[in-house]
Length: 446
Ligand code: FCB
Image (cartoon, rainbow, N blue to C red; front, top):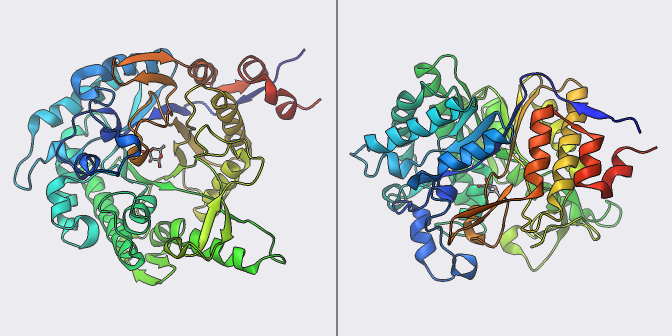
């Protein structure tokens, strides 16, 4: 039987993504460590603890795994509370440790992408009110300048802030991230400050390193109304409110200098044009239904359609077409701007669904590449199982499984599939046949 393959352009970045607090261990000086100590905050009372012990040096063996598996890039984050343990103190040893890690990537022939802020804040900043007031802006810029100066030898690809849109809502509307508030107005204020912080970081990084490519990672969810318009105009209404609350504020601020939110517009002129690529985190697509019992969620209940191909804790539905729609949205919103898929993956401890999720999402990305959409790289979340925020260790996103007690890693079949994709710079029918034969007919009809 003839084989088919979906090839990617030369120089395409294939990597995985991680975040400091989720992999380093013993990040005792940030707001998440404190949050984990509070009863009832994290599922099953889990704690990040030693995480994947990267701070203890196990990044070396994990980078070896990634490199041997053909990955030519890695996205990691640095931890603000380590680099600046107190407002008046820098930790040069911590910076040196990050330099070592980035050199480790270079030695393995891998391109580094560094996120400067991924969910956590130093405890001292949270105690001052975090991103609730503009007092954070000069502090963030100072930290960014210090860090970029120290790491610029090893990195030119920067992500200022990971998922500012999701974080603001989870921390200030849903209340499942610290500080656990339920206040839409404050959530939008925080979001505006995050956009101001991003803009300040963008300009500062370019001043220090003119050749830098700077962006942020947007959590994008293409939402659809649960029932058609004729059935339920209310579903469409709440869908629009939810979508406009999550997916529109940051992109509108960067496109026009005016942040559009469901409760009004905020002028942030300095944010206009502050991205050299669009970083897209895509996991799934939601259906949104009107629900009178959910005022805290603006009367919208998000769920996955019946019969979805769903992950083991029902956290993620495998909807690859939603990924295609997300990429298309990015191309239409920012014509000509390079796209990096900064996160994509699924929680699946047994690797029952991940191989087809991976193959189908790579396939959708290839469809975009064929329209000459400027997609430049893909970072799978994640390399090794790690600490999943309020879901603790209950969710397993790794290409490698991790036992956090023994620190033992075990390769999942998806790691081999992804290695084959990275090494081939594409996905072939043989790979699909070997790793996820159940979708073969659908992907290669006839
Ligand atoms: C994203 C986060 C990342 C990880 C994945 C599963 O929203 O950016 O840190 O938790 O979800």
